[in-house]
Length: 215
Length: 402
Image (cartoon, rainbow over all chains, first blue to last red; front, side, top):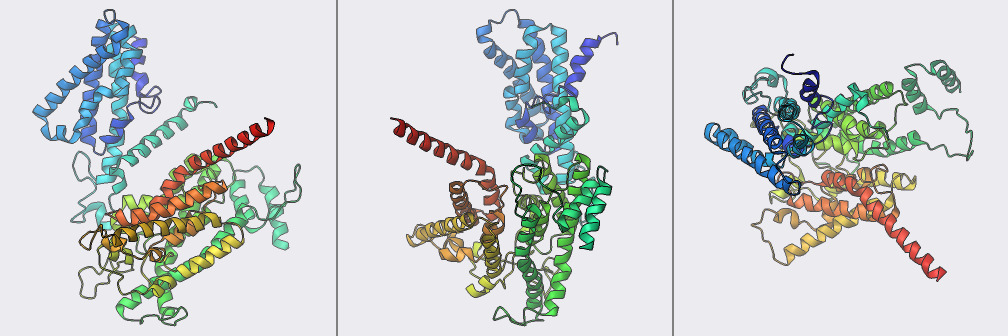
């Protein structure tokens, strides 16, 4: 652990579990519901957000003493918009099909509350290295939930993983489909993504009762 | 009294153990517990939640029995084993051949519904250490009545688990749920396995298996037929009223639903306000659509013409609006609580039901969607009714003091 001190490791690991942006802070839900019908877009989305957030936090942290506080939101938007456009163009150039599938949601990374939240709450008041770690950590926390949700939704909703028919072929009736199994169409619809996220929150809270608020 | 006494004794023995909730569930199902009041009103009526639930189940039994015979009747009618029943007590309907076919299909639905649902309830009760709640007694009876006859049992199992856990237990169990659990189960089935929940293959048993064969059985409902501008499938209004039509298991016989409604209303369990206003809402929407047709705004080329042209009162005899109004909308937990709220709540259910029925392109029925929607809005309706009342009384007070 020469590279990362104990405090730095915490920056990365905390958002993965007990300070997860989706399940604890309940941010960035819209994209988590919209693009998790399949595993591949979920992963692409996760990687894109890791890129935007890691780099964005670094830029904001570098500029933090130069940004007048009255216009800081505008500056943050410009930074994140620039990065998102880079991601969007790269996807359009090298993965056009995926880019079409993700459609507007790559552009909407700009409005992802997690990113603005971390800029405001962390990068504006911390050094470059720590801001970078914080960005990566939160984006990973976001991505991991996306991938879990995407995994269950694709497996149960379409019977595939990454497009491979892992449960058999529903048309020629092989594998599980031979004994009468059918795909759950509800899984493909966004409401079920909300329920899956809800179940993840439920599991997480029942495993770690410290997370339950007193009322 | 022997059994009652020994149950009370057994209860003391189980007190405080892990299995106490499970035992108490069976005990209170059979008898009123021998607890005495310690404070407050000491004279109490014996109709606790379990007795109330049993009353609802009682009112559903005629529908279930009819559903069993009807399931067999619809099948045998198409295979030619029976001829068309002409009156309610016709032996073409009430015979062993129909009963055996129907019971073979319907009873498994009932068993799976109760078995799975109660198992989930017991597990949650034991984990949380509270009493088993009665809520599933009625839900378990409603579920088999509102699904198509041929729904695979494993799908029903998945849906029941989903409905009880997500629809009820996560909100805190019986009495805390926002949505009607039985309709949550149906909605889950509908969105998860639409091919088994809609279309023209699922409403008569055997229709799915015989597709494409020369002796194929059609499984279409009147609503499905109307939605395609094909008319009433030669089924008279009397057939619809008595229930000799294809449809979900228990919702076809309007006569027996009315009998159930009378039991509920006379025992003051179901709210007559909700039932009545739901029907008024449905008739209003039907009248509006009739007006649209007679004003000539749409003609027979429109895909909505078939359903819009149905005479407004006939909307009550086709589909499940009556069943929904009597047994689903009146669920005291999810409905509005205030009297004025009940009128609004019921009216909107009927109104929206018929609207969805006519305009939904994928599925010509909307009762369950309308009731679920209004379940969500019921607390809002109550809120504004209460606010209005408070304001009015505050005003009155002001006038008085001035």
